[in-house]
Length: 281
Image (cartoon, rainbow, N blue to C red; front, top):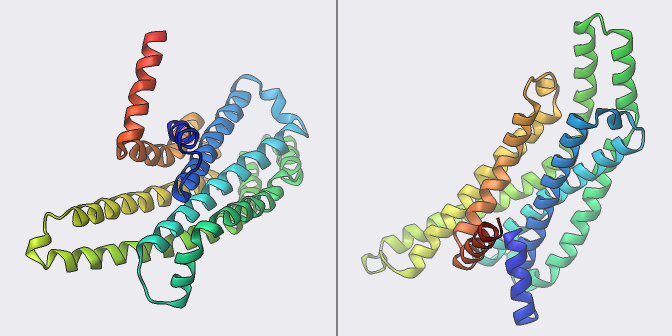
């Protein structure tokens, strides 16, 4: 939320925001809401487990959690596509068209991504999975093997629904990131071939962008892998569900911390916030 607060103050000061800041703010808000939903869901599961039997609350929480997850995934993809279009200089008609229109297209892309996320999250509110789990638990509580098989079948169907909603934006993210990293690598090699530009600011900025996008790609892959495992039956019988949730939230947390650490403005806001919290405490 440091990113959001910084961009809000920048908007108040300048009365406008760059497209990149708008995407970063949207991504930060979606990640913050995702963490909040996970905290609420685990709090209910630990301290108010009887609410998990509610036929209304559980589907709403499931839909809300998956909607925010899909939104963060799509917005991260839009951010990567934006960087790719702005930095890469391929002479293809599509790239030239997007480079001149990307700032006006981004708000529409975010709205469309929210609509797609909502549609993709609706199947998680169906009551059939919860009812089948409850029936299987009542009928085969003495036979844990049968129960595990039924749970595995249910989670397989959930994973397929999850894959249909999450893998398309992830594939777009990978393609855009690959094009961007490939362009940065080739461009830095050409610049390093000239000895007079070894220590140039442009080369250093390209190295910084290359490092940032490589880390972004790695953490996004880890995030999807962790979420895919949590959607499968592999971790359903784990004895440490809280540890799984911490691991699940780690990749976007590290990426947000890296973005804060790589910006002097964000670092200053973070230091001021920590000092204010320390003085208040």
